[in-house]
Amino acid sequence: MAEETPVFQIQRVYLKDLSLEQPNSPAILLEQEQPSVDIQLGVEATPVVEGIFEVAVTATVQTKIKDKTVFLVEAKQAGIFEIRNVPEDQMGAIIGIACPQIIYPYLRGNVADTVTRAGFPPVHLAEINFQAMYEQQQAAAAEAATSTAQ
Image (cartoon, rainbow, N blue to C red; front, side, top):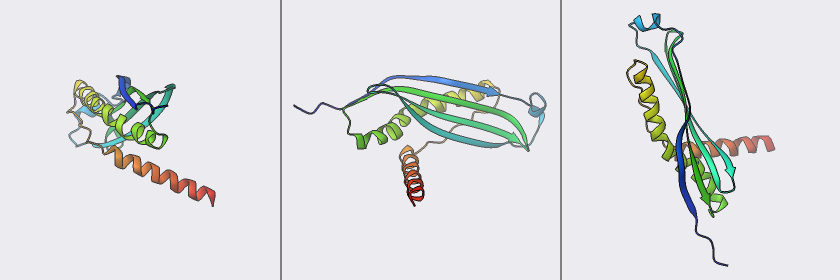
């Protein structure tokens, strides 16, 4: 039997979740001090059915002046991917690197647009090296497995 051709296709990219909070408005808007910005990113993958995966990239952007939140944006951009006939040892890299690289530009645009529509200068999320991020996660998981086994 001939080996089946690998399949990697985007079925859909969509904004799964988005929230904006300005808990200290309008008073905080009168502050002249520059806010601090904290950005957290995450990647998650979920099998949907055989050969179909949902991969989501999440971003949490929080700006503060002193200890008061100026705004908080939480966004989850997701994609549905068909991935079939790919060697098992390559699946992690496809789901952890290739899929997030496709989704991330949409997330960046949605976060910048949301912040701008809220009346603030846009927050432009930096480019992310998902390969380095994936390799760090793999190394951390291997280290955790080694320390647990001892």
